Image 1 (cartoon, rainbow, N blue to C red):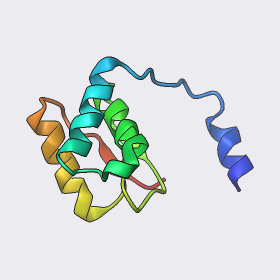
Image 2 (cartoon, rainbow, N blue to C red; image 1 turned 90 degrees about the horizontal axis):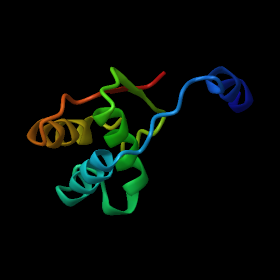
Image 3 (cartoon, helix red, strand yellow; image 1 turned 45 degrees about the vertical axis):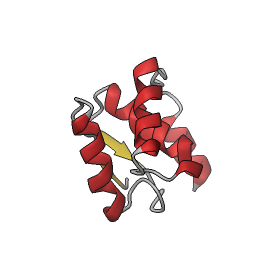
Length: 90
């Protein structure tokens, strides 16, 4: 299954990690919207948000597609002047 998923996404463009995304990721962690030991998850959310993606698809229920954390993530993004990305599973 993982090989099939990788084949589906192999030609999709990759988003750049811009300075604004790094800053937003740091704020997500600082404000405890994402745990400190999950900074990579915070960066995924921040890149999708800064790049104005409509959706962030993930199977990560622990720190990203987590109903309790989503409201915190959305609040931080709005407070920082961004429209939150919709986080959901594929």
